[in-house]
Image 1: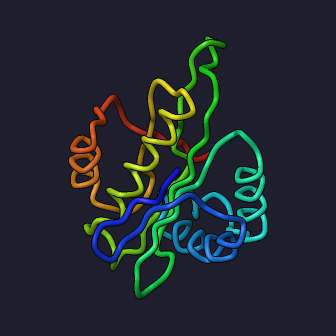
Image 2: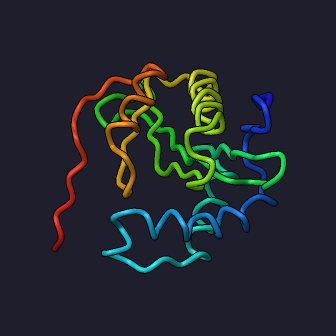
Length: 160
């Protein structure tokens, strides 16, 4: 799949040599997410998970690069059959992070566009995505709707 470029941003599929940087960004993402309350971040565990994803057929990672700053974000997407069907596949976003100083620029839109292309190429019939971070939920909803998503519900977490 060819990279997508707009201005100083490029979105492309992840290579194994990108994984150490994604481990660093994973720590930033974890600190912003609600999940930091439930479990500590372990870069080795995260990078191991990403490595298995990159080397298998269970998903893919798109990285967002800035001409001056290198990799500034990524999206982790998994593909699987619906649990009630063996004939149709869906892509589920597992994580999407872009550094705060690069939000609102073209990088995120490029990444989502490439995710859509890859999902279609893999035969998926839909993509699901959500938010669990300390971000502007309304702005995020509007951005996803601009990209063709529809809002179908909310994410709920129960502390045990």
